[in-house]
Length: 362
View 1 (cartoon, rainbow, N blue to C red):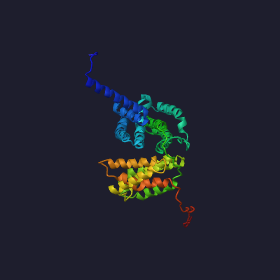
View 2 (cartoon, rainbow, N blue to C red; view 1 turned 90 degrees about the vertical axis):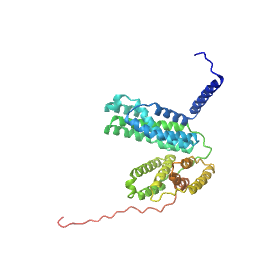
View 3 (spheres, rainbow, N blue to C red; view 1 turned 30 degrees about the vertical axis):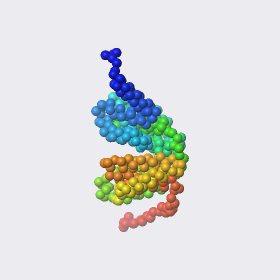
View 4 (cartoon, rainbow, N blue to C red; view 1 turned 120 degrees about the horizontal axis):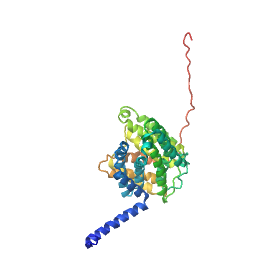
């Protein structure tokens, strides 16, 4: 009935629904993080491909994206952005693959032609990033995530060619898609930049702390843990390596967040991990909450870890190990990293002893 008039209560409900939907779309448009989460949630829902790569991506990324949406709903924007970054790099790579022709996905020559084309598109992002490339991005947590993504454009682009040659063009294209995705994430970080209201921390090199954490990881790498938890050791080592590379490139904000993420992983691998006593951990987290709120400093990197711990505390299924590590190890490391580098004794000069043995009849 095209000219039927809705009863007033039904009309009011329908109008309310339209207004709420419009408000939701307006909010997503105003908030790039919300818009990106909505975009990739819809992509997950509507992509019905049975491609094995997509199946793996969907299974791994869906829960992470859902947790990003929940963090944003609770006002934990930096936690949400971090989770979005983790899910988005693979979702966007899958989206890029869906745009490719059958020839590009199966034929070596077509794949390499696409690799060269993407090289021209990504050219400006393949150079070594300048330490101040994201100096205008605020707050510190957003800059840190953007800096961590910057070198990944070149890493994924370089890996894609050899991976495509040694395995299949499809696999090489996935790495190409990840390179493009990281460039897009840097643009997203710039788009959500806003004044933090605090003074940006002046960060120094973290080589001493990275060396110490590397030593802790090596000390924990003993049987049976080195056998039973080998993938966790590999993951911790990978994040620590990334932190070291970011630090060497002068991307200090990215180096700091990766260093602290590596510390979370290493803490879980120690023979005696931090205590998960709820009352003690909650007390320390409250103390750090107060400390992070004061001083007029942009403490959003530290607050990112605090909110991660608080979120775990709110989960009925969690054992609290991550929150304990953050309270007892990671946040103290964060504040120490803002201080001058600790003084270390000079390392002894390298030396070598060579013993020559002369066997008879030589």
